[in-house]
Length: 617
Image 1 (cartoon, rainbow, N blue to C red):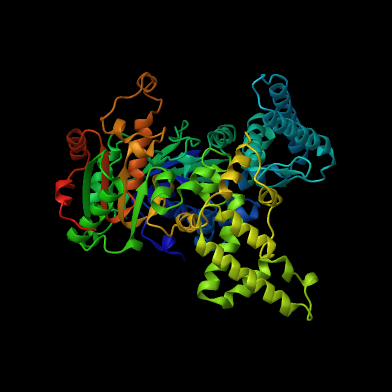
Image 2: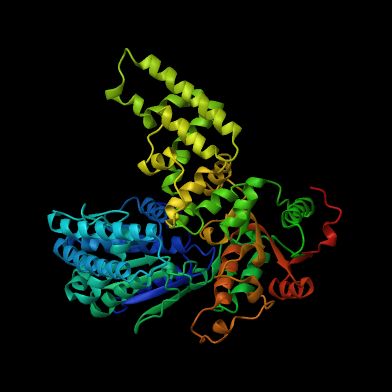
């Protein structure tokens, strides 16, 4: 048994078991706040069904489907269930592909129709391009049209379509975006799909329902309504922890559905719990209570600072961190690896960790998301090969050969034999030493220098696009990828070290949007609209320090504003702390901001700028 399955059941868990035992209930939503153990409830519900109805599912060749938001969550749940064959646990895209993969004819027809519509749109843009359109832009558009035509022409030759990251019509690969669009359309428009889903997966659980794509929720609800009596749909989530704009947020129950609330919080100390309840009060009003036994509950610490905008941000933040370390009554803030500082944008972290130019190179390009996730292809040679080679050369040269066997074309079996192995290894060793020196010297343009050394010394094989930009600095271009590559080549290779720490969660900073599901002993949340400049969020508006825009003020009660998004974000951030929480606010009007913080943070300790005057960092 897993710790989740063995943990004591809460009243919400018991209520859920009763719902799952009643065939007359076609669906439910579980609202579980931060630290409540939502995944535990999900796993316990799955285990309960496996234990009570598992033989029935096996006899009917059916499974319980559990849809997760991330691959990490999928693996955790499968491990908890000991990879039970009765549970089909998968991410959203994988689940949708599982449903549609047998219907190759429907896939082909949908791709053809969708592809031709996309082609017509591209052709229309090309035909109606204005006189000011740059030749480079027209050429790029023309290449896209040619690729689309070529893919459509080869579509009939595909024997079997496969699931992949990005769609390639000619190769028969259906990408994430197309799967997400195609499958809900087929479910909504073809009644047979709903019947087959209910027959194969009579029970479907959706994890992190608040961030699930609206189209996915719509098609699953459609199955629940049309297959009532043969299908049960359950959503596990928390609307107040919705982070992504593509998520549906609140799931409005259908007729006959049950709503289950899980108010327990097993993470937050009491003072932090009071703060997150205060933040949540104007959202859905769910008041969380400690789920821990009285002898295990602890008070924790909550502190806040209000600094003027004109201040030296980094200097004051460091002073605040030092003050917390020196004045904690519960021995908090003593270790960097137990403390996380949450900022609103990656740019703020980049400035503090020394990879600002690298961030600027990718910001605003189509690879921006890949950059923030650590998956942007131009950086792969550094993250997967070159930086690890430098680290091995500096600390443990015994690791070099295994790494070079994976990366260097010179060490492929067809390229080396007994007579050439020694000189080949000598050549590679010299190349590694030259790479180490290049990285150590750093300086503007050292990214290009490091890649050149790696290529010329055959330490790694590079993408053709990188080879092209290494060959010559391309002329000015409107293509954002070409602009990004040019800017990247001009960066200091030293910036990659701070970047690698950041995306590897090995730095003291994270973005506020990226910490959902995580927890840290001590958490500092930085509220700074002036430096953050994030159009979706505004702490000034949330705290009443700035008026809503006319457009936001005119929105209806059911339409969200930046205040709603910011409230949810602050709730997520504050609820990460398991021991101590500090909030640092930069404001134009310190007095008004202090009053707003006092109202929002019950029982929190205020530290003023004057209190920090004697603090040395």
